[in-house]
Length: 356
Image (cartoon, rainbow, N blue to C red; front, side):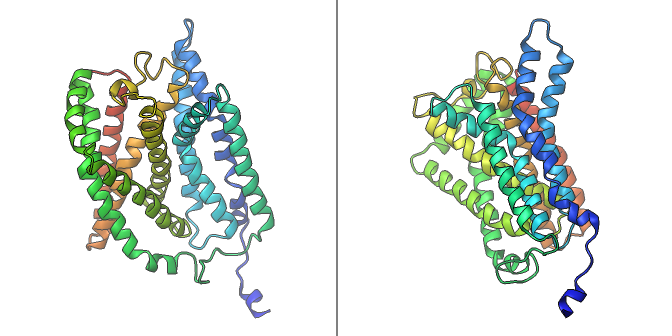
């Protein structure tokens, strides 16, 4: 009785958060149709380029909408179990582009053609039904707690400190050995396909070495698993804009790396396809000229920003940990995010055919 008397009265807004995942869910269902609309408008002889651009911008906006709702849901210092489910579902919708690509590759390997939109709708509807059942069977006034019964995230944060440091060290190694050279190689495409191909062949001598390639794959697997271990407890905590971006980029990259590794090692190498620039940009048709490949435009573009944005948010954590003020750390993070946007735009433009 005493505990019940001291429980704060819930506001209507807090209770309503349990169902705020519905708009991102609706946007995710529309995602394949927006890509199809872009392809049809862009390649039709009498197509309207304005409508084509609007359709592709709307496809990009699906991830942005998921991010916006995850940010809104992240303001509560102690979320209820229902709002926590809604928050995590919103984060998942941010990863719609790599999830759609991953699903498409799997369906291709299973020789199931023309069913991408239908399968996508079925899978997301099943996920939404599961979340809805959780929301309907949970009390709206129960705060999320960790396994030890402490307020959300407290015990998990203390217990995962060492894993967070190891995650950062592994990320630094991947950046030096693979990610930075790989992104630079894509930027070189501005100088022409031959320039990109020449540099790629030189870099492959490093990261396709018999000892280095397995080490890189193990490091990536560790990043994914440790990232998920860090992601789950952090979703329980109150989050600012940078925290939400770090969490959203983490879940996006989890599915992007899984999709990319599957495409390179299962789809391409199994069939003896060279995973070069022509493969990446779906030559000769190009990313805009093939109905399947248009999904790769947001898939790649957002991935570059999310990768560099994830690093920028990690830099902020490091700066704060070394005594930098919130203002100074935030200023450097915004600078890094601006650079991330510029690099993402430049690489995307190169993949769409831009050259000096």
